[in-house]
Amino acid sequence: METTAVKKYTFRDFQSDQEVRWCPGCDDYVILRSMQKALPEMGVKKEDVVFISGIGCSSRFPYYMDTYGMHGIHGRAPGIASGVKLANPDLSVWIITGDGDAMAIGGNHFIHVLRRNIDLNIILFNNEIYGLTKGQFSPTSLVGQKTKSSPYGNTQPPFSPGELAIGAQARFFGRIGGNTPKEMADMFIEAEKFNGTSLIEVLQNCVIFNDGCFTQYTDKAVREDKQLFVEHGKPMIFGKEKNKGIVLNRLKLEVVTLGENGVSVDDILVHDAHEQDPTLHQMLVRLDYPLVTGIIRRFSDVTLEEREDALTAEVKANSKFTKTDDLFFSGETYEVK
Image (cartoon, rainbow, N blue to C red; front, top):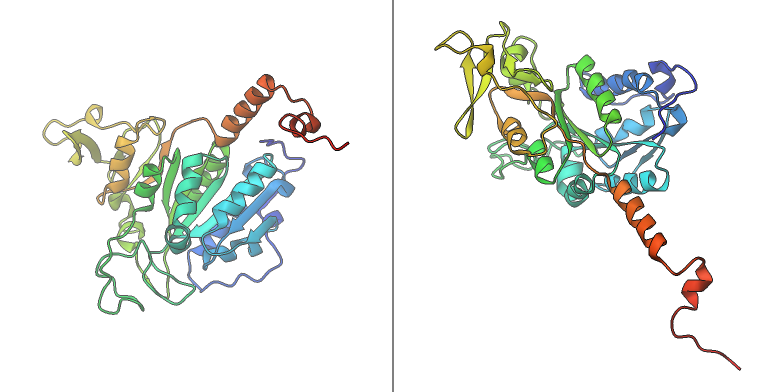
């Protein structure tokens, strides 16, 4: 994809004239501003940027971006976005979706766009609830969670977006708290650089129907102690004192304290986001303590477009047809006399 911009943009160049209409205090505002600040750093022409959304609070996003975009139908944004990208490979295509939109009615579209590895980007707003339709439980709602549609508690085990995505062969998966705009913008930039399908899950607070859903991890007072922000090639160390780390104990990840029981930095696992085998990436996604954020998986692979182009070239090279008439008159034909 062409990444040579004709001018230097600012975040204001990507602000539309539409009034932003989300609930006060919603993390959607943070995601919107982070994207508007990230786009000028991507080196992409403004007229080459497209946002495609489904249905939900998050799906108002294209209205607020001064780019091309489409507000699609429930769960179908990946299908629309795939068509846009395949029709014009030079476009920077972004899917905006939520936990309900992506993993309930859009579940099949979600897993297959990841499997195919088309060169586009997905931002998944996860607030563990249906917000737009007023508070029903979603595919990521926790067991026991009381909602408008589960007043006595949800009985259905939740999906983990990262676990589902990597199981569907996602090559790029990142996760970030909804109140960390700088890190979020940096991850958006890295997603755009990646050749293939990238997925970033944003842990987004819903102040009306699921307030505080990720506070135990994202609150500033506990963030450093409860989150491990991974970076490729760096040891997995966390904590306010940078004295906690992750080691592999048999088949489980274990938290250790540096300096205790002879543990040193050399014993700590070094993050390898580029590893093809997703086993360790799945283990990181599943950790509850610490919650792993950052780019967990970034494995470069052949894209769908590259496979299709190679197959097309092979078929053309071996075909006896050079024009449409060759095909039309290649089989049984009837001559009218």
